[in-house]
Image 1 (cartoon, rainbow, N blue to C red):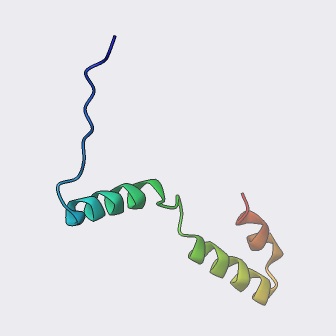
Image 2: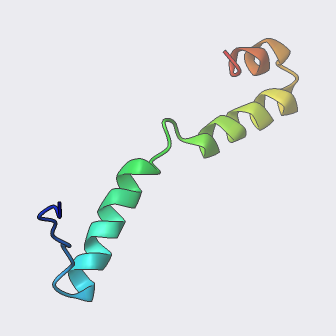
Length: 58
């Protein structure tokens, strides 16, 4: 028995690109800003604050 199936496609490349951008930005969004965390770790090590450096991992 054949099912009634349909293939949906994008009407044009602009819609396809916009959809992929929206999906990717939502799925690939980091939970936290890693650049700030790395900079904070570097700052803590530079001033020798090992306790602050340790807390950044928790």
